Image (cartoon, rainbow, N blue to C red; front, top):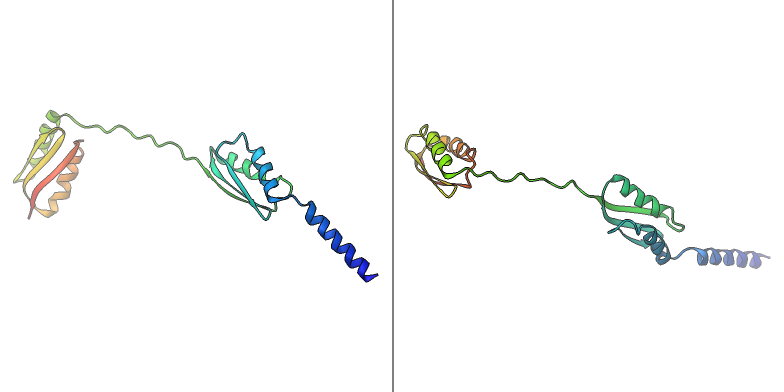
Length: 157
């Protein structure tokens, strides 16, 4: 009687294992349900579904996870989906004209004894002598004029 009981239990266990969905089948089913979500990838190992890709928003990410969880045979879901970031809008760089730069740069350097500024093709070139504690203020003032570049050829005292 014990042997029959053991054999019956063993047959039931084999039957349950044989009826469980295979990882490849689970993967195919999840992928088929995500066909309207381009760029999403899924892999399944030992019943653990791992999804990845870029979602347009948080609800898309949650939807992908729900789709995977609802497939028979999925034990758990690892959601590696990323949410697309908003596109960064970069303002165009404004470069002042040489005439404007020259006039403004000369006005600024009047406050710094021994410093001269020349402008050519949007580049301000600084020459002369300056105290170390004045340098940062001068460079910042020149950058605020919107040149292409500030070339520092100053001798620091």
